[in-house]
Each structure stands twice: as C-alpha cells, then as structure tokens.
Image 1: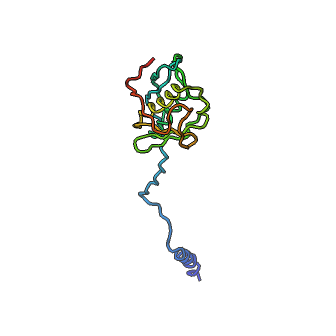
Image 2 (image 1 turned 90 degrees about the vertical axis):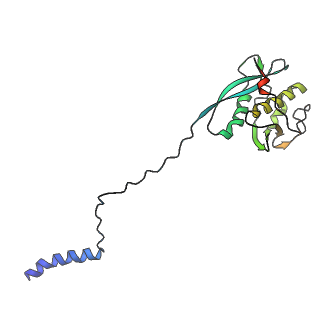
Length: 184
C-alpha cells in the first residue's frame, strides 16, 4: 500500500503528461526575432523651380516669372503649376488675367499634348481678343515645361470653339518660346 501511495502521484503525473501529447513548450535557445512591420513610407516633399507667364498691366506682352513649388509626385506638377499661376504674379507691374473663382478641373495627356478643362467661370474673364490669346498662350507655355507640345482647352470637360468668343479653342494652342520671354 505504501508503494501504491508513492507510485500513484507518479503515475498520475505520467498520465497527464501523456494526455497532453508531450507538448510542453520549452524555451527556444535561439528565438527567431519577429520582424517589425515596415511602416508606410512618408512621401518626401520636393521643390521645383518653374516659370509662370503673366501679362503686363496694358496687355501688351507676356512676361515670365519664376517660382518654386513643392510637390510629392511628379505627375502633379502641371496642375500645381497652373494653380500657382492662378494666384497671380508677385511683380506688381504684371497682372493675372484668369478669374480667381476658376477651377482647373483636369489636365490629361493625349499624344504629346495637354488637354486642360476649366470650370465655366473662365467665361467671366473680362478680356478682348488679345487677352484671350494671352490666356491660351500662358497656359500652353506653362505646360510646355512638362513636355507638352501644345494645349487643347475644354470648359466643364466639353470641347468648345472659343473660350471668350475671340480666339479659336477648337484646336490645340502652341506655347510661346519660354526662353525668349522677358522677365520684368
């Protein structure tokens, strides 16, 4: 009986160990480190010098003005440049000819050209034929920095014959030679 008292706890321990399948966890002497999840990289902000084009106060000529814009994706540069152009010139001898409430809805690439859509507020620009020509030339010239050979204009994503009733907007507009523009 004494032997049974001594063996019974031993047998019970052996029985429970066997029922557990012998799956006792033993610490691994060389644990494999759990890799830390890679955080999503934060896009780095870059800066680029661009040329904007504005008319003088008398609408006699277009002039260039250099700016630096910040961007994270290269493909955003054309729209960012036009948004900066919309803000107007720094030089007080120059003027913006685009109404402030105009929205640049889209810029798409087709072959080597740009297709730019403005909101219908563009029609509120109080410009004659020279001003309308300047408007088309300014946009085409600004976009030429981003390898667009010409620019076609839309209003509310629809093709138009003209923007303000003077210049032909049914065909793409060629840019001015940005290197020949004067800086005021």
